[in-house]
Image (cartoon, rainbow, N blue to C red):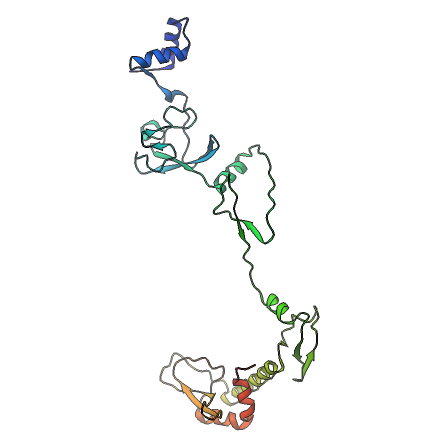
Length: 283
């Protein structure tokens, strides 16, 4: 048998010299409990609240099993008679859902504070240089930091390679100019090179591409056609001379020719030294 609040008042009146707590204790000795659910609010699914310094979130559960709930113990549920927690059994809830109470993340509790415009004490945290707050692994009680992952850009590369260092660049007529110390206004230029050999190689590749465009016309290699031959130039390992070869599938060579004759003609136009420079790897 469980007593309502109205019945409890009548009993208090009967026991004029006893407090409500004493009356309740006496009744418990005889197996009578006063229902604790009268003053317990129902917390909706998704609600985030603080309980004794711990941030908890109400989540929907598939059944009445307590495993995983913050209040679950080997001896059963320890929140049943606590006011302000809210019912977890669907028969006691208006939404007819089973719920559990789990620890809320730092982000969830922070969002709750913002949404409710709660009065909070502001604590400023000095983040170490080169680090940022690890929001995924931080909690409201423990803030963790992680190194800032820098996104590398070409400007970063160019600054490291050229700023304040010796380099060279090409002019509009293909001349190569050497610089002892690259200035801040020059290191980002796209025609900068780390060495003369690199500049010579790029100029040679450009000549080879121009010759290929002239000889091939509008032709482009069709790599979906695995039967047609696409010719390219390479360096023989035996004597370092220039030779021709072909590919059926796509390969890593920069320039291809429509026919063997056109590939051989390109060698005659440019000469082997220019082609070797374009194909060189020691730049």
